[in-house]
Length: 267
Length: 314
Image (cartoon, rainbow over all chains, first blue to last red; front, side, top):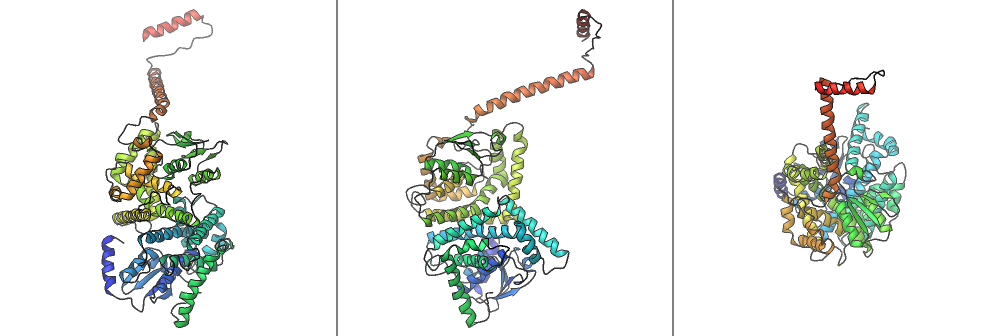
């Protein structure tokens, strides 16, 4: 968003309170959504839960095309549409809810840095696995990505997306990496997160922040998604404090809430 | 003993391979015995690309991360004293730099029209041998532009100016975050430099030292006094004699002249030969000079006479 548009949106956002009918759009959960998109969507859901803001999850086959930036998930609040975790956090902040207000400057810097680490390594590794690893591509990705569309559209869209992702991988230097190197990077990233978390309940001690939401989104998705092999989830399972962290957030923000209201379910 | 094949300061993928000066810095922090060879033709490096590290066993490594891993294996580790959490912080901040600052640096040096024409292209054209200096800088610019578009511009192709503003805003925020993290410490993790310091220094030094015609980010960086002091401190500690060498555009490069000697000689010889060949070819084709084949029956004497006649006709 440009600076002017951002200021404008913040102004409008600040005026209206969070409505009851806010919706989050993602692709079809059962048949279509892929690992990386699922992780992003879960991160946003977790963040909104942590802020105590009600949200309804709606699954649409063309969610990617509806989104203003081309990425899922996006939320529809009032008459505004905002996509991706970063802008959503800012939007929510403009409405007066923030998780990171209690942090000092150094902690805020660290939080931003760790969020970039997750985006840089975990998200890229997920994209690599989905689109550049031949086994996964053949067995899972192509079938899932184009599933709502008839032949030949499903094949065309899948190949187009794959080509785009491969170009991007090449641009950032991941084109020549092997699967083992990518898994090693994932391991390094998990190690860093595990070391940073230590024995604390959340990354910045007692209160969760958007970093916790993002990490939860990615790790939980990796742990619960069935891929061609288990190597990716094994890397995460090596770190017991990360497993405990995921469990804690799932219990606190999803299961307990689900018992109270049925607006969101984690499956 | 390692020898690092390095392009002359200011040439060959410097903004792209920002690990390059950071490799030198890392080596100096750890005290690794590194000899730096400055060459400007990537084809002269043993692996075909720069930077390249030749180890004492004769092995050649050219991927920057592997170079650092190799140095670590040889017990030159700047991160030895860091705690696990500080190591994690290093990884996080390096990711931050690569995501937020690197695209803007590429933009500043390669996409911004004024900077590219007046600074970057001139550097490379001066440092490279003929005929590479005609097409290589242009090719590198196109590669960088494509890379930047893939990284950032996928979803917003129509708002280039807005995209630029957003990129610069992100970079400014990143610099401010670095400044806040550094605080008033001498290095990021206490009193001894670590690999994070090498990375940060290489990015910041590039921004600070080069005189750019349109340096929006530079102005912001200059406002962050603790980062400027940090750079000067590292420069004075680890690069005391190179301090004057670092900003090349204002000074005529004195050191690469010795490297250019063989090129200049070769270029001269080649151009003289080419000129001669052109003249002789033209003379033969237009009939000014004709070579008459002497028949085997002729004695050498008459053969020489024939040649003399030919000369007289000319």
